[in-house]
Image 1 (spheres, helix red, strand yellow):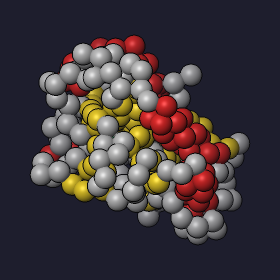
Image 2 (cartoon, helix red, strand yellow):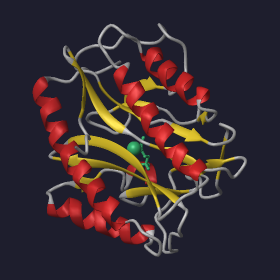
Image 3 (cartoon, rainbow, N blue to C red):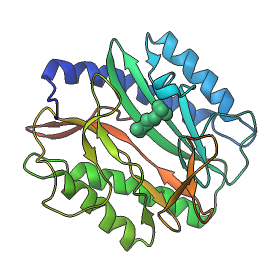
Image 4 (cartoon, helix red, strand yellow):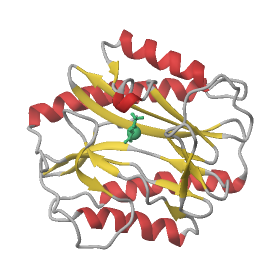
Length: 249
Ligand code: MF3
Ligand code: CO
């Protein structure tokens, strides 16, 4: 069942999303060669506390950290760690913020220092794919239209779309209905309605789309060791089109 949110609930989720967006803006300033994802994890913990919010991922299904920190060929759910990032790396920081019971979810891939041209193009295409998905998120369209917009764009650019992880409704808990794949067929899936709130979070690979799981049971990485990027927003469907609740401005 897809739970529709009231205007008031969406307002509260937007407040949560503003804290999340502010966190990403701070992280953007911290990223440079030599910094560790553990420092970012500690910063996020402290920053959320200062803003009266809590990290919803900590304790979720046994996950231990406020952030996921996925480096280079890691697709998602990397653990924050104490080894330094190097020039040319990319790192995706993903988190879910709880502010007064209202959740928001947003991931962003950061370039560490100067990255290769191919890597920079991966970041540009993945971000554009997210915004194309958001553009397709209008009442009357179906969930499949979102995935179709993302997949056709990404594949035309010569990259691939991860299938094993998808966007999701969000509200009282991190994962609700609907499921929002970043691939698919136009006109398929549930119809988009005012009051739906969900994430769009395409993971895009330079090489093959398949993923494999690390021994830690969490971290997914590409099967060909090529890089993977991700941009994620939480959005609300309204009569006047989608609102990005985690917009960084
Ligand atoms: N933020 C993730 C998402 O986009 C959820 C991470 S699962 C967790 O769906 F266990 F790491 F919290
Ligand atoms: Co997320």
